[in-house]
Length: 370
Image 1 (cartoon, rainbow, N blue to C red):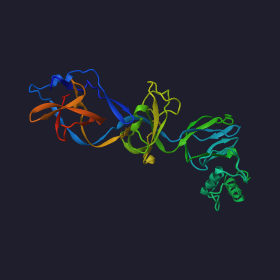
Image 2 (cartoon, one colour; image 1 turned 180 degrees about the vertical axis):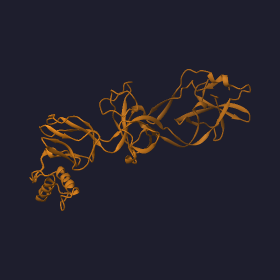
Image 3 (cartoon, rainbow, N blue to C red; image 1 turned 135 degrees about the vertical axis):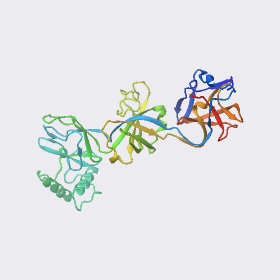
């Protein structure tokens, strides 16, 4: 090896600063540890090929297995809590979430919350939601779910529903009779207990969707490595893997949690305990029903990141810090070694993209023998 250069391994530390899709290398003070590996003939102790192919900047991050769409379910009126769905239970359409003064609050599917009683003459998206649910349950045959008016036919369907549950057949739906949610709900936590008087607006249950997801945090500077819709591989407890896609990227990560990759967090801050700004990322599984690991289990997520097609690359430890500045590789041909200056591109999977007029696929470059 030339005395004018030294291998970057240890000297470079292969530090990456990812910003807007660009990759910068940060050099550290040089150490000539690899010089001890020089052969008497001046050739490097080992070589590796210059390869042409696709290079990915994929990352491995730590996350937490959870459930989708966590939210608090508040009491809709005053009274004593007489029954509540157990933690870990799943509640489907028309199932009971809890009871106040012996009156059941049942789950119906819809995006608009139950913010008012529904009765003849009312109009709105919440009326459409009610009609769709009554139809799905078999009580609303003949109803037009695209008509947002509470008609006489709607009242008749409501009475059928009330009769099935042995409640007063009023033909009206009280605000405290229904809670709307996007789909089946899983009870993550009881925020109140039987005998409590939660009162309007006070949390009774913490619920989530029933589909499994993974949440993790990324430093804002690395967020470009996670794009919505991109495929990922999740390593689950026990060593099994599952495939999925990035479902969402954004929203400040919980400032109280400094562990990158931790799945906790809502939009409470934006900086972890290490002071670095972070965003929360969620992953939806391709086959969520097949994911059976316990809630809050730690998992590892493999991100594809950016991919460069058909580029030349060498192992990261083949890089030389040239005495005159910049970086190079040591090309070994016909029993001789020569330094070739290169421009660096993307790093990924232990390799680095390199460009240079004198560099070709299949060439051998020197590496330290570790």
